[in-house]
Length: 231
Image (cartoon, rainbow, N blue to C red; front, side, top):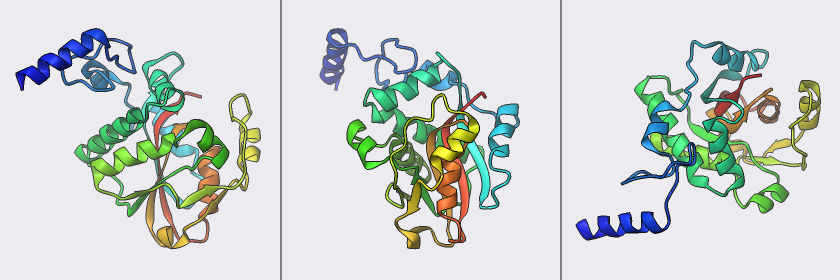
């Protein structure tokens, strides 16, 4: 056991592992995100103004029971670093870890919705091929591990390739996402309580389009994202 520990420490000297949030070297048994960052990441308080804003984005959609976000996104902050590592540096473990952390905290705080299934917002096949994975799947996997609620990345499909939402107005974002999604496995969600997950919540246009695709299937939808932007 000691030899294994010494070997691990030696490898850390040669190839230092760094925290994806702050960039500092990981030590001992730390993985992906250092202990300090795990503790201090900016959680979204349920009684905060941002949390109220998150919920209000879906207030006009009767199929959405509630909406949550784990962290607060700020430009050049630690959450942005984590999302960048997840989406653009190929580190799927970031998403799984955040899902695991969030699921555990929801259980501890008695805030976990009574859901039957976790589903992730899909990528278009072209984007999936470019990236190699769906970052929302990684988050869904972690949530599932923590809560015991099964997850699926194939219930919804994206039928049309869309360019990035960045730089678009709220109206343009909704127009860009209209009719983009389709339910591929209706039997999986019909009459069920589902948690719909994505990485970042801004206007809610993408998530609203997913919920719209499930309309008529008598679903109760809870929305969860890794982070919510302050807009």
